Amino acid sequence: MLVCYWYFIQDLPDTRQTRFSFVKETRMSLKRCTLSVAAILGLALMATPAVAQDSVTYYKDVLPIIQDNCQACHRDAGYNISGLVAPMAFMDYQETRPWARAIKSKVESREMPPWFATEPTGIWENERRLTGDQIATISAWVDAGAPAGDSADAPPPKVFAEATHDGWSHGTPDFVVTMHEPYVVPEGAYDITTTLVTQIPADVVSEETWVRGWELKVGAEGEGVHHMCAFVRGDGESVEGSSKSAIGLGGLLACVAEGAESGMLPEGYGMKIEPGSVLAFNMHFNKEPGEGSSFTSQPQVGFFLANKDEVEHEVITDTLGNNGFEIPPNVDNYRIGMARTMKKDTLMLNLWPHAHLRAVGSRYIAYYPDGTEELLLDVPAYDQAWQLTYKYKEPKLLPKGTRLEVDFWYDNTGDRGTRRAFNADRPIGFGPRTNDEMALGFVSYVELDDAPATTDEN
Image (cartoon, rainbow, N blue to C red; front, side, top):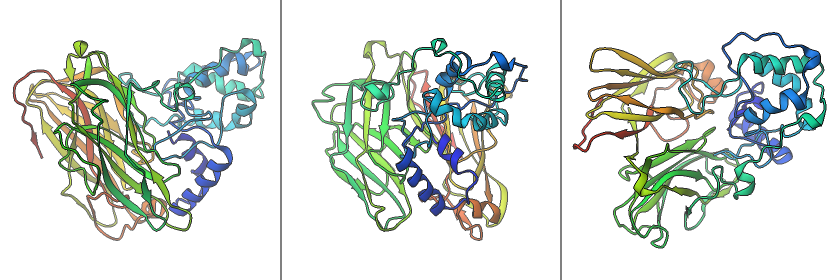
């Protein structure tokens, strides 16, 4: 993710030009990780017990923690949707030791890893929290002078799939669909949204095919990709080219943005692809215009097959959205909401709140037919630079008749405008550009009966 990028620029002036220039220089000189400090540690809520400093060493005590929680980001060949990479690796003692005090600071301040949901806890597959003992171990190690210890105590090196599977984080896909030719983002461009469409080759999907996972790649070098969404539409239409919008395409697979990561569906879950389907890549490019800023993007999606005889549930990815709002100028804590009433028993697989620069918080709440309510997700410190998808360990049942509400809060004041480079002196509504706003509550789910489905939204 963008952990290291954020970590490195947090004290710089918060302007687009500064961020782009700094990241470009850092990336070219250091070329390190991304994905998310995949947990440079932190956000533990437990008290940290004392650890004897003289007994803690890097190889015996600290390296196992770093392997399990940090190296997914802090390593060579890490990647992110936007091309931003971390300015340091933590793959060995020599690389880690210079950053010891910074690591301790981020651990003790509970700023790492990039996990912004405060409630609920313990139910998410990708939740990133260290235990109190782990935090105390790292702190004691630093306080003792960050000793190396005996390398014989080290666990075996961690091997990541990207290094051995051509950059794919879940291993080699069963098949890959790539846009037929690169899309050129010109030097003078600042903000472009387009949908690139390509036919899924008949020799790749020649019959009804079920997939259990997919990984999206933007196919671009540089820092200019805001998001990528992928849609599969099985209408037999032969299309090659581009359009301005993905509206009406249907068949959303997934979207990824800054800080995002891919994942696999649980056993028994899948998505169906029909022969003759098209794959649409909805791309949002956002960069600083200028000489030498042009780049190309040739997006692709890697698919992982499911055994169709074992698929019990067909997964739908959809969004609760509000595109009719207007945020007044110079206001903070401005709320925008949307809702849907479930007409079937529904299993929720994941939740992904998505908005832009003014968004500061998001919340999902379920109002059940028996009159009770449940907080499904609270993200009180939303940050566009961390587009996390909150994935349930076990699917969450929302009974028929449940009303799902999604709320966002926005800060359209001058202070935030200065820090995030937008004009707070004008009203702002829904739009595709980075300086526009969005209010989208993405959900992936399964409907549990075969009756025709309808939903009420407002």
